[in-house]
Length: 464
Ligand code: ARG
Image 1 (cartoon, rainbow, N blue to C red):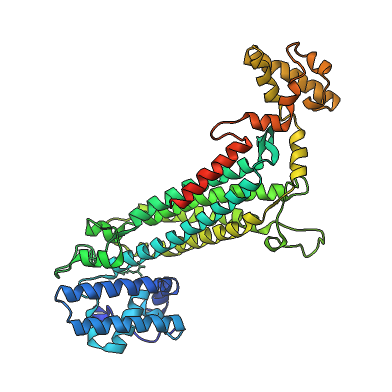
Image 2 (image 1 turned 30 degrees about the vertical axis):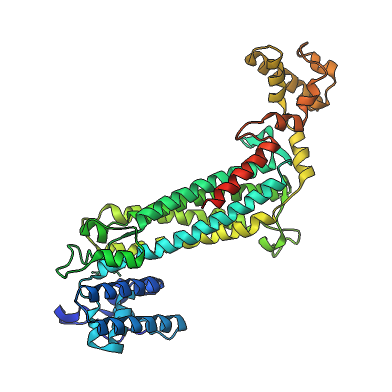
């Protein structure tokens, strides 16, 4: 990256070169060069439109387009000389175009400003990122459906307050994550609509005096609509904030999921095994196999929340229209998108490889009186009011704690000490299978409901 020349793009009204440190301080090329593909895409659309508007000749347009494509090839080949003195990706590419084709290159910026250019680039870039992220969400959801189907009959304890609550099927538990991801997908798709509006043509802030035809660039760039106000078009970054908000919620979900995986792989739970390729060891403790992927995803969640907070604060004090502050939108936005995409990718790779330890899950569900509610429901079916049943079962559980016996391990005589309404058939409801099978309604944990939910999930993914 070189810094030798003064800035030719706006040097006209300046009588001395920009201070070398200030040039570096105000430059964004180090991070915004990743927008090069979208910047060139926008410029090609702009040049195409300028020809139709009679601003460029067809020869000029063709030369601009061919050379922009060559410049893209130079960038991708790593031979492009990015210059900090040229500030940003936009001026680097334009300067190179002018190097190559002289005065015609200087015509590209007619009727355009870097303000609407950058606002356009960042929307084009984010639109692509959202599409990649949506595909990763779908891939992770597919993995969850496969595992849920295979584990529709596997029983584990369900928790509230991280205390054993009621038995659930592992498939049902996994599908809770599927639901959260479905909403994340909806949120990002919704955010995509507002990202996909075109500010190009807003120029610096007020529009332009050239006879531009924004419908043409809109169509060429695949935007859904043209921004309706030039001041708003160049300045607001609400779509980026919305993206970070949706990304934060998605990361919050992945972080909770991570926390469960960390717990479940611990020696205390041992509910699942993660394949070695998703774990690392310890340099000092030979026995260790650490669930690094979920831990890191849980840890990375903070940076995405930080990006959201950073962008909200970045925006809140800005008067209309564009301010240089907005150059600071990129790093947090890039980081949030990278973090979410990579976290989803790691999870989509890892989830289908989760190995449940069914016997251990089952034993854990047998401990902790997980069928106590089932006993209360049994007594309700015998005609007792629920509150009384709750108390009766409470006494039975206390007895179980004192004698180290689960409800299903007590004899009929023992159980009848708490209510004479209890008969032989009680043992069917005290089993884990009886408990989960009884919750047989949409959204319930019964294995056949899990299979029905997997089918609904497959239909949803097929409709995307
Ligand atoms: N690098 C700037 C940004 O990222 C581009 C727009 C600068 N416009 C200006 N007039 N200084 O926002």
